[in-house]
Length: 205
Image (tube, rainbow, N blue to C red; front, side, top):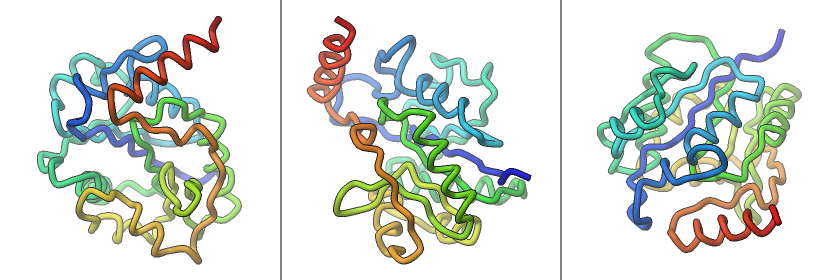
């Protein structure tokens, strides 16, 4: 029987370094958030949850999230940082008393992520279900990262803006890190977005 995996797509931040709402920035056929959802929907997962915060109602309406096969969690304390939003979402999942073997945490601002890479993370987890499967960033490990259920309680206590980074790097003996290469690029500024679009348009020529 395949392992039961839930996905949290983190989309709660205010994207203060960008003009505009990052989750809604045009990308491919729609925007960053919807394309991330499409990518995750191609993976072997049981449940997809979108974690919103800043501009939650606007994002939900523009993306028609209620019409999609996803769950939505809104963190009213999103301004306290990514760690707080992860903790809030994991608490909600635990309170729903649904049974998962693992929770895969992704960001909505890594537009180059492929479902092939995410399935690679999931496949590695199925071989080592007691390990955290993270993504190699050189000197550290980051998300996408898949956490087994023995870590759910600790995830529910995360704080601050570092997300799961500090926690991940304290668990070095329990982590298998995979290479995602250029897929780990995240978009935080308009300059990075313009560079992404220029590169994408160039490759189409």
